[in-house]
Structure formats: structure tokens, C-alpha cells
Length: 292
Image (cartoon, rainbow, N blue to C red; front, side, top):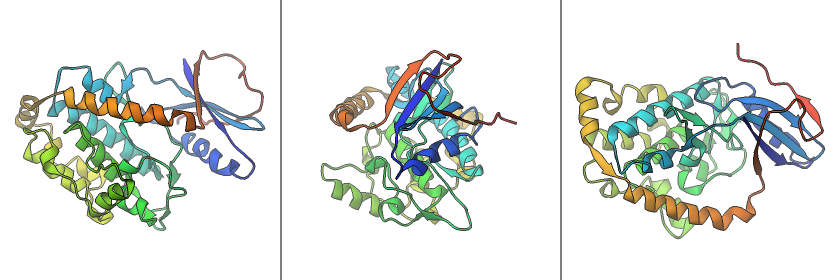
């Protein structure tokens, strides 16, 4: 079973649209959605990728009446592993959010949707190609139109972690300008975290959600943080800190409502189909190299 992502393009933006294919064909990791094949028709790019069974990240947590800090860390470590791989391949995702992280039936994660991704040169960083994505997850440097690098993805992982530990966004307001202001100041309210969140978890968030890119922990350094250690005592402590999923369910209901309101504006079509010898859409086939 595969998933086809069908992206319309014009001659003016064809190269921009093809960028997702160019990036995906270089990625081979069990934490990343695998590209199977790709086609270009006169009007569409068709990306045929593995169909990731399971649920979106937050939906996997609300399946339980209660979940623990250890559950959060279990997912977080896998997300960090996936993003560390991307950065090692000099790729920025730039649209990490719970919707784009799938949890399989084996409780492993898959990072999907590389429509906003871009390659980077660590010696010559550049601005984000376009200001696409979800405002509440954007790093300060993205909002300011400054150059972006791996710290932009680290920021977003911090936002996702905050949500898992609170059932709330760290930077939210009805007025988008206020959201921007809060993000630029990196002002998030620790009191909105669940009451029994550990100090180690709070300290981790502060290292991820710094307004200065250079002050954020790199993905490889995150694994050395006390909260993520797999020692017996730390793991036991995380397992004893439990949270009910009710706030997270409310958050998801609000997000779903917003998603439905914007559904008619979405320009990307998704569908699922059984693999067949020929693509249902005629066009040229793009080469997808096999993992070495």
C-alpha cells in the first residue's frame, strides 16, 4: 500500500515544487517516510511514498486515559533521531508539527510531508525559501525573515514537546500579531504545563525554546540532557509522572475545527491506492535511487 501526493504546478513554480522530490529521493531512514517513485505530468508532480499506517502523534497519546512523561520521552527521542538524520543529510524540514509525525502500529514514528523542506549549507545559511507552514510552530528567525538552519527545527520540536506536556500551544492568541510577538520574545508560560511536570522536563524546554538560534541545544546534544537519559532511576521517575489526556483531546478538537475551516483552501490532493504496474497518471518517471 502506498500514498500518492499530487501537487499541481505551473511553469513558474515547477522547480520549487520539484524540490520536494529532490530532497525525498536522498533520504533513507526508518524514521522518515520513504519515497517509492515519482512522476511528472504536464500539470502535476506525483510523489508515491510508503503509506504510514497508524495515527498522528497526538492522537496516539489520547488513545490512553493517562499517559506518562516516559511516553512523551519515548516519542521525543525518536523525533530527535529522525531530525538528526535530516540535518546530517543537510536537510531542514521546516514544517515539523504533530500532524506531520505519524506513529505506526509498532509505536515507532515516521516524519512526513516535506513540502516546506530545503537543503542547507552549514557554512552559508540562507533564508527560508517561502514563509509557509503554521505560525504557532515557526521559529523566531523564520518570522523575522533571517537565515535559517538546524535550530529552526529544534525550536519546533520544543513546541511539540510543550504541547505533549500541557495540551496547549506555548505561543497562542486570537490575534496572529500577538502570536508573532510572543514567539519573537520566546515568552511561554510554564504554569500552563501539567502541574506535575518534572523540573528536568521544564529545563529541557527552556533549552529548546530560546529566542536565539545559537543558544538552542543541537539535536545531538539533546540526547545528553538529563531528562532524556535511560537510567533506571530517571526512567522510573518519568513513569510515575502521569497526565490525563482530557486537555489534549480538547486541544485536538480545537485544531480539527480550524483544519476543517481551512480545508477548502488546501491545494494539495491526497489519496491512497494499491500499487500497480502502471501509474494512473501519464507522465515522465523520475528516478528514485535505492538506499545503499
